Image (cartoon, rainbow over all chains, first blue to last red; front, side, top):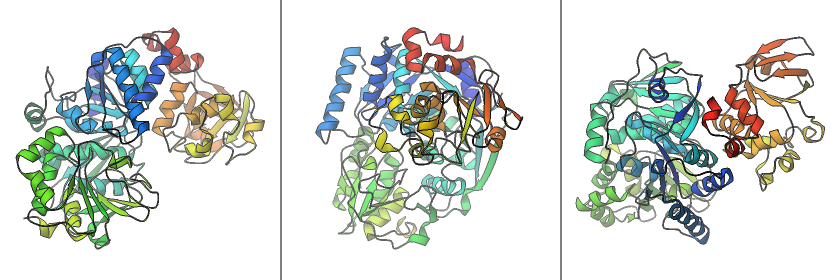
Length: 416
Length: 165
């Protein structure tokens, strides 16, 4: 009996657990990437004990892959040597870690997945418990196969209604961040529900869970349903037995009700995710770079929206438009269906997969004085390069509209 | 028994230990500069058993483990705060710094009060004004980690199951 996070953790612990309790839980999968694996190796060596179960370990190279400089190359070699030494075979470099985790079937309803990456909250979109941890804890989990959690209280966000045309989950989430603030969900489990969620496809649900991190949440959960199961079967390699888990007589700390039909296209303005404004309030602001990528919004459906807007047109001559598909699988499908050609013909730079631009490592670094409009999840000062640059966050449709005009532009007239 | 050192709301990790000192992870080295900008006399005058008292959202900001390590290195017995930022909370426990959550104590304790803390029961006694506050008792596993000097050290000599045993 309890909220979704209590229900998920109760099954793992084998008894009913409640918010506020601290529990030691067997984790199903331990994820880390090229940025965070080296420090996990350090903690692992210090403990000096063997790996508990190498089949629980998944390592991705995506934050700076292929390595853009010597430092990254050395860190990756260290990671590779470690994997060879330990016989870790679940190694991926086919895209942004969180997308590949879903595609490869590691994320199923009820799974406990810990990641050395703050956006591990993404996995909540499929009814799994996903949360981000420091590298030391990942090294500890390699040895123990376990992690301790303080069972978080839950804030339920009840979303009702149907969005207006041109309004996407990204707009809804930026609106929520503006309403709750960046600490509005600190240490809480955010549970998204309501008739809007019931009708929302999985690629859009992912945006909400992914950005629950930006309001401080430990996890951002959506109860699995028929939509989730159909997605797992069609789009992922998920195997084994799993079933949806639902909240049962939940006690919420707070319920926040939002009618999504009232939301118009949103932009999270420099320099905080909760600096949310209606797009029309900042319309016309010049944009030097449009970056369509990351674990938030670079899935096939996102590229389809962007290609739909850019088809037969040319991007603004002074705006750099970079498209980085979230995974090789997405890239291939977009290629087979002609989307990549449309994007290239419109003047976009289509890069290999990964997430280097989001953290200013490579593939779209901003110069002082430049302003980007991007589909990513975070706009902290200096994240994409110079601390004197600015980052604005919006939906793929709004990003595509800005790509055409070179300024922040209402996407609705461009959507057929 | 120790003296209370009080700090305000939203103490971030840069105020606990500024980033420029994070070139080491040695607790005693870090302790030389802990709170240097918000309370310059703390590092020189803090005594073993003293207590750090903070308001809401203590330890917000970066995920650096240096912040709780620096406080632990200063020999403070524990931190008492109204609430903690999530990653600081985890880091503190994992590096073996006991932390108590108690808004009544955080609001009432003033700088220099003599404080007695029982980590096992969560009882906080203010000997200066006679008030007693009750924090949620620390789970046994947190005390085991603290006694071992952190979770990495604990695991060198113990099985993880012993944490919750």
